[in-house]
Image 1 (cartoon, helix red, strand yellow):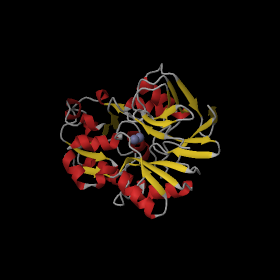
Image 2: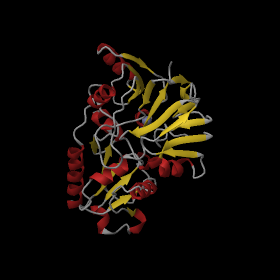
Image 3: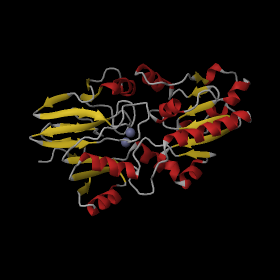
Image 4: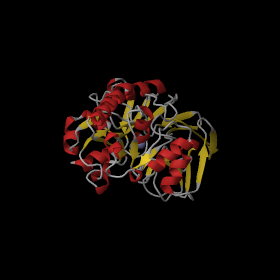
Length: 336
Ligand SMILES: [Zn+2]
Ligand SMILES: [Zn+2]
């Protein structure tokens, strides 16, 4: 029996009668993490990991009907044992493990296999069927260790500061921004964050994650020389805004896995691209799939056909699952 099937509302568990990350309002939902393409407004009941509560409530409303589970905690719903396990993607991100009549399925949500210190590290779960994302499911995507990327960012910022030029770094407000703040050398200069980033920093800090001191741009006069030593963390949507123009002539950069493709940086029109992703790269996807021991793999969310073909060649029963675009895919679509 299939424990998860694709329905117009999203991934559905027939014996449990609930959806995983539905994109249309449903009665019962299990949410893997708080990114906008996974956690949508309007469900009557939400089940999610305990560490994701602060972000979910700040994004979907304080009054959502939310039940939380600690990682590894098991509940029984219509005979389906449900538990959530770390996905290493963003704060609170979880894989969903379902067990019914001896059959075990795991839906990965988005995941990353390199631990980064801002959320619990990805934990491989043994299962019969694994539903994997494939955002970066092409062999060209192989990430450098994040320490090297942070060194590149530090060097860029240090150089700009030495030349009295502000450094504007664009990245997603939830997850990527906090990972960058956690990983960079905060001694180089002051750090300013956009209003979309700061409330999420607060939730991370409350969750015990180290985020260095950050300031509001409004705390500085436009003439303050410190501004020219600053690193400014802003969402992509702030590009070209009056908010950005206050920093005068500055160097700008974009941090994303898509920066692996030179065309993406050119289209964005930024000076630098840093290849930093919250998703598994190609070797990471293959490693994670192997670790589950699954004989059957359902591929969603990205380069589905390439990964499906590769897994079939390895003798696995692989097939694609149709879902809506993820946040990062949507991002590239809009950037051209
Ligand atoms: Zn995500
Ligand atoms: Zn996603």
